Amino acid sequence: DFDFASRVDRVEPSATLAISNLANELEADGIDVVDLSVGEPDFDTPENIKRAAEDSLAAGDTGYTSSNGIPELREAIAEKLRADGIDCAADNVVVTPGGKQALYEIFHTLIDGADGRSPSASGTSSRTGDEVVLLDPAWVSYEAQAKMAGADLSRVDLSPYDFQLEPALDDLAETVSDDTELLVVNSPSNPTGAVYSDAALEGVRDLAVDHDVTVISDEMYDEITYGVEQTSLGSLDGMGEHTITVNGFSKAYAMTGWRLGYFCAPESFVSQAGKIQSHSVSCAVNFVQHAGIEALRNTDEAVGEMREAFRERRDMLADLFADHGVDVPVGDGAFYMMLPVSDDDQAWCEGAIEDAHVATVPGSAFGTPGYARLSYAASTERLREGVERLADGGYI
Ligand code: PLP
Image 1: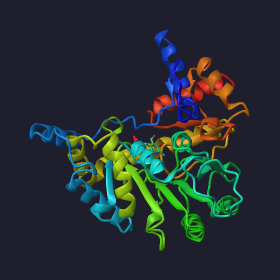
Image 2 (image 1 turned 135 degrees about the horizontal axis):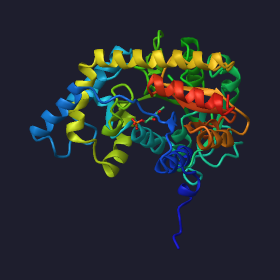
Image 3 (image 1 turned 45 degrees about the vertical axis):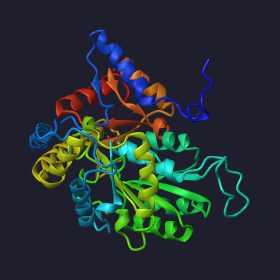
């Protein structure tokens, strides 16, 4: 018998896994499943990015790189972030194998569990580990990664406010205190698609500065917005020292399988987090990093086309639900929406896949029961078919 570490006991297996297992079983039986559960673009990576990787491979870029990434890519990323208003130089950037690894390193750089924790600022805390605050619904891996690092979680529910942050600022102010170590903000949001207003981000800034809290700004979907501009939290006055900006190539450039992401942080943070990177993954893949430069510099058109396709699908899907009398809070970014379903969202999702053969992810996986997350990274025909099946099966 293994004597498992508490860090693995603290986390649950991914809820999306249960859904995709069910979908796979059905498909193995020859049943066609409309899969609206996936969190990745249904597009192929743009050709010029693939070519850049091929050229780089051919040129022999096959060895380790410096742990924090090749200088040209770090500079290209810093350039992109400066264009977003963030004060960032190449030395502030760590290139990681995926945004998920960036987040993992950030949590493990900042969070102490019960054993390593310094006494609470107020001296009255009964918490077991450093406090991480999440805005619910929150992307599934924040909770798992925070818990693996030993954090104690506090959660602010945005569902009463159509998933917007601005009206929830009072709730957030009641939750964030001098004891809070980290707050995670993800705009545009997975799973709601919400893009937070500037006023909301300014509210976050005020709390972060007042309570000396570090904020992870996960901007993975910043290129996928519809008619609004996403403001980078780290560009706000006073937020440079309080923000760690996380981003990656998976969603904007349809590069999920390439595993390329990054974070930008003050240099003191980079040198500590760099220890985790160098002693775990060493570096991101060499020729993939070279392709990343091409992605950042020469893909405006391809990204624009994908954005336009997502927008069309979002509008169509919202209209189809409206035709069935279902009002879905629709966000201005990413490619997800949260469909209000029965209180037992787990049972709803299981039924929807088993009877109607439509795969979705239960809202409870994101901390918000009563909803199912739908991804509209699927063709318009499949989306239409999915809604029809849900309606025929009495699920909407
Ligand atoms: N952050 C959010 C909000 C995401 O939705 C995802 C992917 O689903 C990630 C981070 C991680 O993406 P990757 O590791 O592919 O860069």
